[in-house]
Length: 402
Image (cartoon, rainbow, N blue to C red; front, side, top):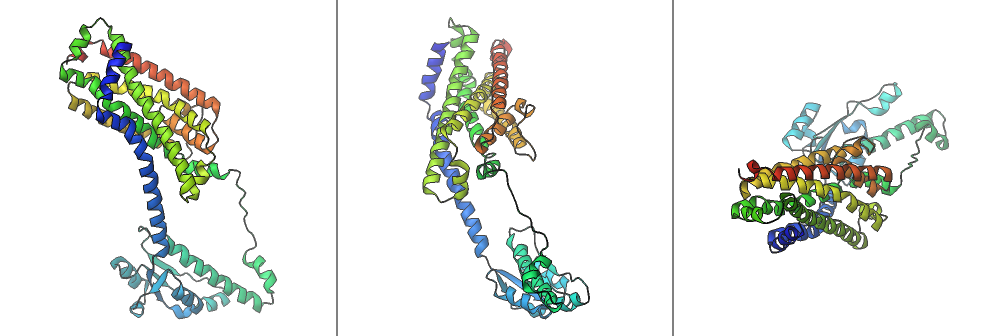
C-alpha cells in the first residue's frame, strides 16, 4: 500500500498541472479575491456617493423650502427641461426614456393642506430596479426635514415652545441594544463566504490527481501492470486514496494558511474596517479547528473522485463526470446561508452543509464544540463508508475493464 502511495505521489510531483491546483491556486486565490472584492466595494461606494442624478420637480412652488434644498443638494441636478413636465405620466415617460433619473410630483400646497387637516401624497418616480439605491432615501430625508419644519411652525402657532416640540414630533424613540458583538454580526455576513473558498479548492486538489490515477492509468495501459503486482486491490485503492487525501489535505493546509496570512496582511495594511473587525480576533486555534473540519471532507471528496475516475474509460470521460460534483457541493453550501439556517444537532448531520455552518460559527466566535465533534464524527463515518464502497467498486472487473 505504501509503495503504491509513494509511486503515485512521486508521479504527481512531476505533474505541473497538479502542483498548480494543489499549491499555486490556494496561495493566489485569496489575494486576488480579497483585492477584487475590496476594489469593487470601494469603487461601487464611491461611484454611488459621487453620482449626480437628473431630476424634475412638478409644482415646486407648493413646497418652496423643499424645492430649494433639492435644487442645491450635491446628489441632484435639475433638468433644463423641467418646465416640460406637468403630470405624473410625464415624469414616468421621462424616467423610462432616460431623460431624468427621478421625478417628484407635488399635488398641492403641503402647508395649506395641513391647516385643513388633510394629508398630502407626493409621488417619487424612479426606476427601482437600477442600482441607484440612494435616490429614494435622500429624497425621503429632504421630505422629512420639510415636514418636521411644517409641524414645528404649526406647533409654534398653537403656543408650543421649541423645547417641547421634539416630544410632539417624535414622541417615541427606539434605542438599539444589540447583544451580539461586532465580530458576531460581521461573521454572520462574511463567514458564509469562507466555505465557498475552502471546499471547492479541496475538491480541485483531489480531482486532477484522481483522474490521472484512474482513467489516466487505463489510457496509458498501466492499470493492468498494477493489477499483476503482488498487491491486493484493497491495498491499491488505499494507496491511491492516501495519495488523494494527501493532495486534498495539502490543499486544505495551504488554503487555511493562505487565508490566515492574507487576512493578516489585509488587517495590517488595508484600511477595511469590516475585515479588521471580523477577523482581527480570529486566532490560530480557530484556523486549526477549520482545518480539522476540512479533513473528513477531504476524505469524502477523495473517495468520490477516485470512484468516478476508476469507472471512467478515458481521461475526457472522467472530466465530464467530475463536472457535476461542483454543483453537488455548491448546493449544500448554498443551504448553509439560507435564512434561519443555524447549526444544530440536525443540521450537523447534513454533509457539507454542516461544515459550512460550523466554519461560519467559528468566524463568528459562537461555535458549539459539542456540535463540532458531532460534525467531525459523522463526516468521518461517511468518508469511511464511501472509501469502503470505492474498494468494492475497484474489485469489480466490469468497472475496471469497461
